[in-house]
Amino acid sequence: MVPLTLDAFAESKLLICAEVHIDIEHYLLSKCARLEDIARVYSHPQSIEQCRIWLRANLPGVEVVPVGNNARAAQLAAGEPDSAAIGPALSGELHGLPVLRAKIQDAADNRTRFVVVGRVSPEASGTDRTSLLFSVPHKAGALHSALGVLNRHQINMTFIQSHPTKQTPWEYMFFVDVQGHQADPQLSRALQELRDHTLVLRVLGSYPEAQ
Image 1 (spheres, rainbow, N blue to C red):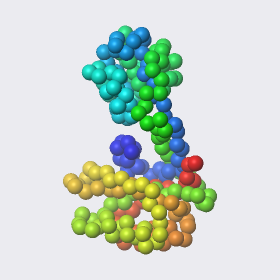
Image 2: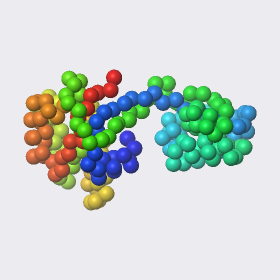
Image 3: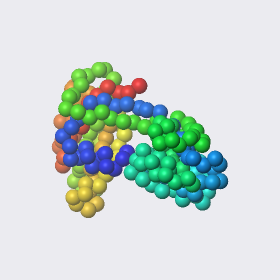
Image 4: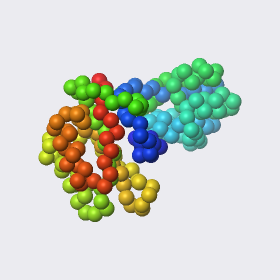
């Protein structure tokens, strides 16, 4: 998860309306003819992390410079004859950077989950996911008690991540995905009980699961 995205969900009233899984392929883009000619590589931190093993094996000792996005990385590399960028092939086309190496991501099945946000709440489709944000009291067993509600109602949790609240030190909010639609009687009852075990509970949205 991208921390800035989690912060935005905590502050926004928008709902998650859908999710999309996109295959991610990374390309090494450069005007250099050989890997040996590259002095530095620009890319977004997420892309760098997804190509970490390849970079260590093929460009050891080369400076890796994180930038805000891969479009900016390509722009910078296009202006420096000894630089390269990691990003989609389209970035190379737009900035006149040839593909020096293709599909350099460490995981062949690299996929990224994106969510669509808006003000609509889709009706139940039969194969849905519901995203939650909640915080619990800062005491022993509080998270266990909250998650125990899902267990008692036989709700399948597919994802959980903690994130600092940025309000009180050592306090966290939790982002959780569960299977089912908030309108389903079983999940509806679980959410009602979960409110008794949390300080804050917000349903970020129910939406069809991506295939």
